[in-house]
Length: 193
Image (cartoon, rainbow, N blue to C red; front, top):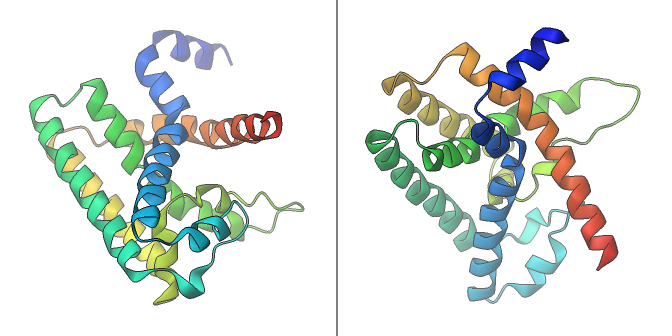
C-alpha cells in the first residue's frame, strides 16, 4: 500500500486527472457527435430509444454508423498529427484516453462473461459508442472494429516509443475507477434535475 501511495505522489497529476475523468472525454465526444448526427438525420425516435439499458439495433440508421466511423477516423488523423508534433503533450494524452476505450470496450465484454455471483454489466456502461450498433450487420463486428482501432493505436504509440506494458497498465488501472465514478456522478445529476 505504501508503494502505491508513493507512486501516486510521483505521478504526473495532470495525466492522472485526464485518465481519472477519461470516461467524460469518451462519453462526451461520443454523445455530442451521436446526438448531433441523429438530429441532422431526423432520427429523434431512434435517439430517444437509445438509453443506458436499451440499444435499438434493429433499425439503426446505416448513415449514422458510417458517419460515426468517419468521425473516429478524423479524430485519429488529428491524434496522429498531434503525437508527431508533441508526443507527450496533454492534448495528445486526451486522444490516447479516448482511443484506449476501444481496448476497454473489448476487455469489458470478456469481463462480463466471467461468472461472478453478481452482474456488473460493465459493457453496458460503454453504450455511448456508436460502434456497438455494428453488431446489427454481423455478430461481434463491434468487437472486431474495437480490436482494429486498438491495434492502430498501439502501432502509432509503438512508433512514437510510447507503448510499453507499464504505459498500458497505468492507464488500465485508472480507467476502471473512471467508468463507475463518472456513471454514478451522471446518475446523481440526472436524479437532481
